[in-house]
Length: 140
Image (cartoon, rainbow, N blue to C red; front, side, top):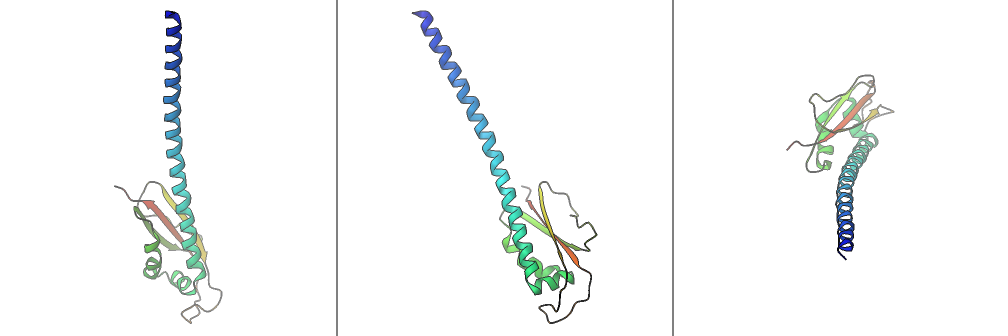
């Protein structure tokens, strides 16, 4: 009879150990999945913002003349709380990087060129420009 009790205790101990290990693994996997979801959402947001700039003649003009302020007015309200951003405008062959270092920066860029008159009613004879949008989580 005593030997049977020891067997049940070992089975119970093994079950508790397996449950603890499985719980820990589920916790770790779920945290990694939520971080990946945030990254995908930020990249989709960057793509949407740059597509809006690309399809708006006035915003295209601002990129071509390298006017950042009107672009910031469009971008700033769309950035989620807890995140910060920066934009750079340069020639397509140049590297438009960030001046400061940040962890986990999500970056996207588009090349903007002129096809005809701009929304401002002017024809801009300029080289195409590359606009790069960087979004990162604010440091606490």
